[in-house]
Length: 432
Image (cartoon, rainbow, N blue to C red; front, side, top):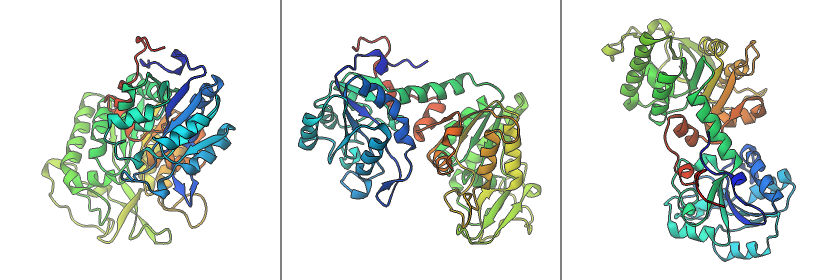
């Protein structure tokens, strides 16, 4: 159960409220390309507007390196938000200072002011107290609803709570409750599907799921390092050879877990390979299952090369049909599935049709999660590339929960404290 105060626990009526949202959305050609995170903030904003509150919204967008950069401006978001919430949204060309104060003085109850990118100021990521104090000027309450940033101790997540009574919005509560429930009391069997590029980024998560889940499947570029640890040639595929020892440790941990209970650790047995990510480039399927060195203790002992191995000029761009089918079949045997990270290079667009040439592994997972093979488990999806791909396919509302936070969801699943949550008022506190 969420242990922090929410906007329902305090008096919001007619107050000026500073709301930290996560509008770190993709902007293409000056327009918002994906409004999922904006939509997820609406329940909190609508509740506060019904209380006749004046709302000051703050967010970051991208990595502008502490200085103004037009391509990272939040101005395009204002128009999208206004269309979604049917309220006039004013925009301030800064997030602190005279420009904000002038706009705030003109703001009426039940109206919204969206401020410019927090990260145009280097003090934001430095968790600078002076900057946070300036952010708080004119506000009576701080509401944290940007789940995607609460794993960082920044001025708008941690220092700000030193200057204003601070509570949670609905989105933050929903994210924390859903993820915590899945990790603490999942309906079993529980399966975790983990993708991404670097093992180090998800090492704690992998270890957590090996001890917690009934099935763990690994895909995406991360799987290439596991393949190296099993002495599989991966050509010019993306991999971090320095992480091979980590991969070996995880494989051994999975094998040890399987001796204690019914546990399955799945690595790709085949892949779609090509010499280029170009959608027009020829592809082929490689199956190396008969060439895997089972005894990782003897790495890097070599095995004979085979025509079925990845060539030196090729790279693995998606899991193969056998691996995809095996993962999809495993999903059908589970009641809860956590998916974080796509299985291939889903950003490569198709020359025809909605599905790119390296997205078929991810599509098999989608089909299985949505019950197209009979059983439909509870689905929890996280990670920017996963949610981004699901949104591009117009399927985001089809899953039980698609997290708005990449790093935050990883940290929470791994059992770590989130600074932006810890800084909020506890249920037992006297915040009014």
